[in-house]
Amino acid sequence: MAVATPRQPRSLGKHALATPGFYRPDDYRPDESVGYLMRRILTTVSLEVERELEPSGLTNAQWVPLLKLHMGVASTVAELARECQLDAGAMTRMLDRLETKGLLRRIRSSEDRRVVNLELTEEGRAAARQIPAVLCGVQNAHMQGFTVQEWEQLKTFLRRILANALAIQAQREQDNGK
Image (cartoon, rainbow, N blue to C red):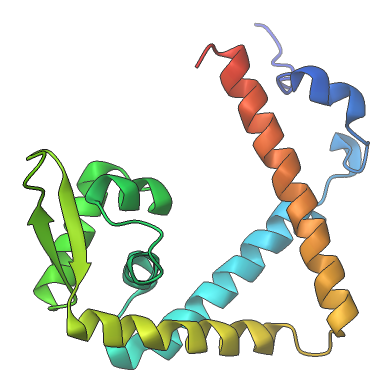
């Protein structure tokens, strides 16, 4: 019977040369990893935002597309699905719920019947205007004890991690011929 050996991680291409050895398999502790900590923070922030928005009847899954529409980030079903990183089916179900709540309406384009434009109703605009205050309150509470300088530095670090993640993703897509 063959003994299984640990699977080696796939190479990150040219990123492997620049990768520091912060983590090692022999002493890896998930609860000390940056990914774990970011996920825990995101989860607690999301739960708190949802709790704060509960009186308005909006869930985390619903306020994001509502805010993106309000901010003009997207105006069609396809654009909103891309921005929210949802597949077409999930986006359709989400829009059904928002439409049932009277927060938005779908309008088929007269130029291209395949395009469905989205428009917030007056109730939708009123609900969306409340979201930034909730987000600011929750995030400010999570930043309690930080100085402005520390807050700016943290954002710089997070942008660097994001830039690395996007570079790795782009490299993978290039390697896979996408």
